[in-house]
Image (tube, helix red, strand yellow):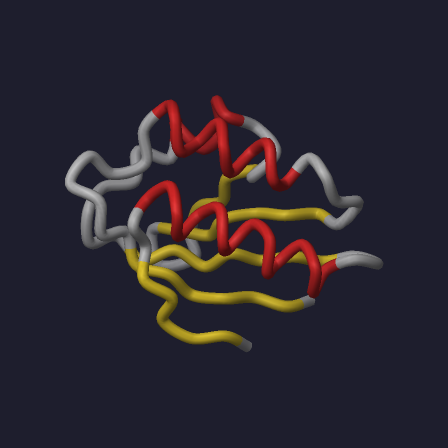
Length: 95
């Protein structure tokens, strides 16, 4: 498993358009891709727009993007890039 912690910087948080783009990026990979939030107590499926929206992520929220599978490194890079572009998120650290 690989992961990267990110901080939401967009004023509008994670809304429909960015959730759609993140989901679109996640669907290109075989790996399981999730967002952990609420200090790791909750998760959202990155392939599901509804799951991402249900997370209710707002500006300043810290999330951990986690990828597990055969193409996890490529998935992490691609989804993190989409996440950063769409939410103005700032990468915090990679593990």
